[in-house]
Image (cartoon, rainbow, N blue to C red; front, side, top):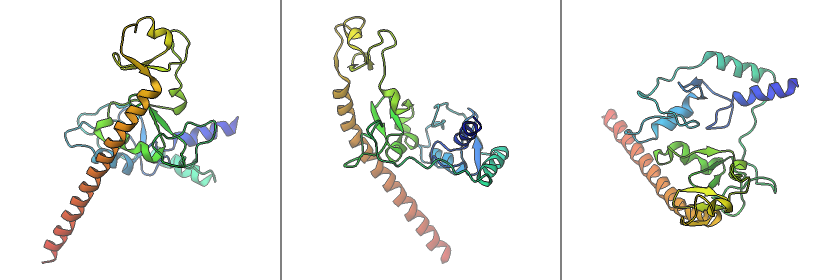
Length: 229
């Protein structure tokens, strides 16, 4: 029982962005905790016109909150380190037979850590990062991968159909009832189509991030050259 309590505390002291123990922990207004550098980078990488929000609950903040170190959490992290317990490692493991696999991994599939209800796709830690960093995914809802295997709350049937008219997953009974006559396809077909479209979007996003990093690097080099004269 005590061991379960320790594990619970350990999980609470982990950053949901880097998945490691909190470093210089900060608590943002919605109550979620992050490493100071993780949440700062997450907000800095967004469009300047975008309102900063929590990567977990998506609550928006106006103005951008000041990031102040949570000393109590920092002390708890230090106590956890001294106890000899280690933070659960970031889950880079291969997907097992009972695991949900990342839909974006090519070749060897990694274990998914989150699924997106809008994209209808599951992501490993690496491929999930754009959802935290890009304003384009700001309104997307992330859930545990197992929750993608959704049961219809009304008919208690697996929702294997996607209604394009209402943009939601439904079961076969729903398609004959309130969604009768709507444009529907199999959830798998919709997932594959969105996965293909997202693949192109991800490539463009990565290219934009790379171009931005190159511009920033060039700016710093030019600035240093000017200062040396």
